[in-house]
Image (cartoon, one colour):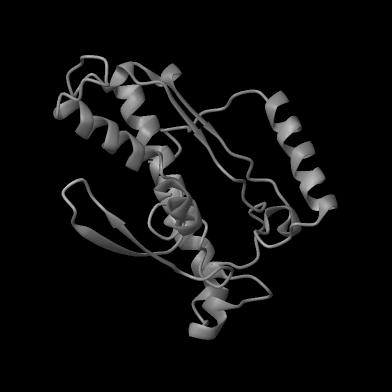
Length: 190
């Protein structure tokens, strides 16, 4: 039951699906109430959150984990699978944005610039951080981010679930599997 509640909660994207509330009883009989929304609001790329959870289990010496020290994260194999993003077309520039008020930041030319900036920058920051850390640990081959950032607005929309769009997303995924691996250019991000 808890896993189904978690799945409902993690897909409760604001404005698309309602927030989700549930209660859970722990092993000591304590009742915990949860009021949750989509995790993308907090971590649009949750890879760093997952690594943090694994590291905590290693620190606690959880017997389910192979014995290792917390700083031996170079032994991790990290595969981060994104959900794709719309092609970053130049829809606005600094001169335009400097004149915007709240309404323009929320709904400029049919897009949501403020929301796009928050979600994309948090996901990119995680990718940049993990690229830097794995390179520093000489384990950059142990980290792979799979993300297509060339989608159209329709392809990247979270609320178009037609059969045709789902088939197109499968085709996009198949093409993505054939693309060569590329990595974050750490020099370019300086």
